[in-house]
Length: 375
View 1: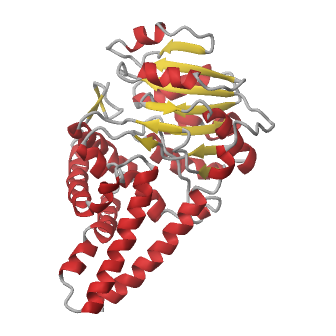
View 2 (view 1 turned 90 degrees about the vertical axis):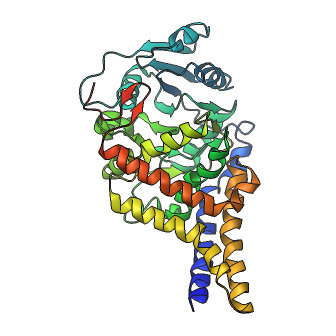
View 3 (view 1 turned 120 degrees about the vertical axis):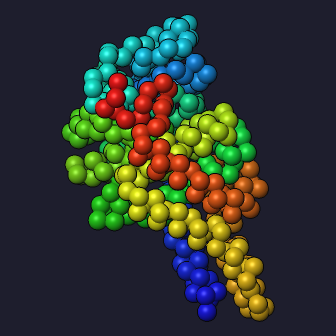
């Protein structure tokens, strides 16, 4: 009985996942030719990059942005109190489109990234903002593609999960959860209807119509929130903006961490806050992961008849297959899809670390406490 129930649940999940994936990738074919088929209007973009102690990443990030073959854009970097050579590296890049600023002293009550992003928005001159993280790389045609997304969707906000450049074994096991969960759980085909989906953005790449950004208050409206994208997902719908969460793996790539230990600590630092500081949401997310990673293997292990064996293998094929598709799209090796139980076990450890560290305010990022109330 359990096998049959979960089989039909898995079939339903597969249909839901397929609909979400088709929605997420629906513009891919058009965007592939966006640079060749340049369509009006050609918007002006300010590429805005907050940077704190990013000496490993900042030069590659800025040079990739400057390689865009697009007529109307600028690149602005806000050095947010770096104590390494970030500012010196930036100063060595000579390009009229690049503007470098040092952030004013951060007031009490502001999270560091939000303060830097707010300062960037005040310096931007073009009518569309493109916020990217300092560890991301834009493709040379990224702005043409983003411009085309705005042309086709008439959205006020555009975002998506970047292609990953995993650096460790832990990256290959844990990070695939990040693009998998939104597509597996959020009804992206209903993003325009806020009764079903509030909003969906990924902080590594978010583009705004400046008028809407000002309307909802920008980063000032979430100044004390540690995880900016999760906080913005709560604010944006209140102002009626149209959000598009689309496949941007052809537009931006990202190398988040260098070591497995850093990956665990980084995900733990954000997980609890990404789920709005609700322990029940953390537990629910782990339960969902259990169902799609470990439980199918348990069903297979306890199969006693050929029918149960067939159902268990079918269920496994659905979950491994969906992960396999996303892993290839997001830059993870194919074998990651076959290590689902390990993904669950590591995720549980990270979740426990996230809750404990967040409640005890133990986390440090770039030399600063995560708690914005601290200096």
